[in-house]
Length: 235
Image 1 (cartoon, rainbow, N blue to C red):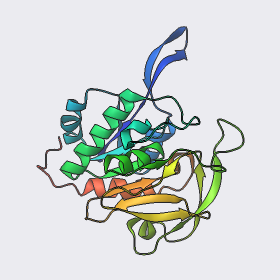
Image 2: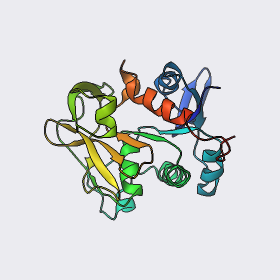
Image 3: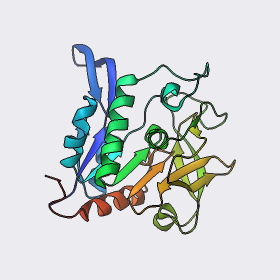
Image 4: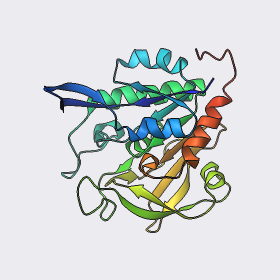
């Protein structure tokens, strides 16, 4: 059976479809399509109580933490910069709990953009609250820039060459969290990928692989999720 990959969702106070306008947990279709194209089965994980994270992760073979709004600075002990967006506290709490449960259980994790930032924060790291030049000039449009892998890292093995990636972010990793190492950089030295060095399959990328055609990062997650031992708590 294909591995079951959970993907965290946005939580919006107002979303429109048909004649309806109401609160919604939603996810750009590009995320589940990328999981499917890479050989996995996708399931959405809307925000829930933190205590629910461990039993939810126990039913998964892999976890994707999706992009989205800025992480609330209080999560890493900082005062908010005026350019930091409004907090998404319910998402922060839920996704930090998902990351914690996945790291505890050894469930493979791919953390995308905001997800990479949350992974860093979950492990005690901090964030740069505003970067110039990393968000496309037109709001709602993804830019592209090259990232250079660090040889010998997990990401450097998956994508050994410098590659253009689709990107839209104005924050980035500052101080690395416990056990994380950089595995790719932008040309200006911004950390573009991080991973754990202790053998657990956990990779964060600052860009949005779901908006591109390169399947390798998601295929690597799906492959790692396919190797989860039977009876390890995954249903």
